[in-house]
Length: 342
Image (tube, rainbow, N blue to C red; front, side):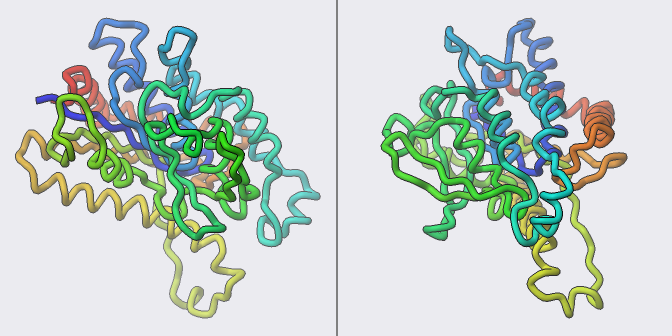
């Protein structure tokens, strides 16, 4: 029986290069095994989920061309980071000093980010995307999560411009100013990065798909009806000595708390999905894939977009997919996708 094929991509700032490169390789394998050089990721997944940098990648894979086909290749999507990353995370000395290095004000001016998003997403709307997806953000005024849903965007109140969705999901506190965007009716939404509560959006995707209708599927699909490919951004837990943290105040905890929330969210989601799928029959149990690349030579900071670090992030990603076990896993994923997840 075919499965609902889900792609989920974590948040992680400039480390979005890592899942971007992994998905380039997956797209290459899909083209090779399907004997179709124009095959793209959106041809083989039924549902997408993304947070922050993963949200930006997700949106880029689903932009339509004039014929309704995916406009961008996986390579063109990751090029947004490789070619524009340095400008997005560029900060002059005055900005550093006036912001207190991200403590008194946001660390980066959002203008370069918004320019890059405008160039990529132009005037497309959520309703224009070619597959259903869910992108996470957090509404600071209402104090609750906000989910952008392509499959609900036929209603104006749920429809937003893609550049605004991308801006909202990537508005990481202390890095960029909070986003205030409008839906198609003109209602305003003050939003910040969804990574604060769902840095790994795979469980969000699972929950959403469970309550959707897909042709030929049960009214409420469960794990046995799904194939989930979840890709991380090289997050790794940082250790903090008790002697240091026990006397920390608000100022010292700002950055560590963000790191802990984002990393903890990713690990927790993977744990729960592994538990869910482990309870299934062997063929269904194996339909959950978690790919977590390693940051080895690069700086793992979300905002280190120096030319040297961009090269190292790409090199770390290429090293990860060159691993024989990872390559075999990507081959298996590609073949299952072509076989509708079966």
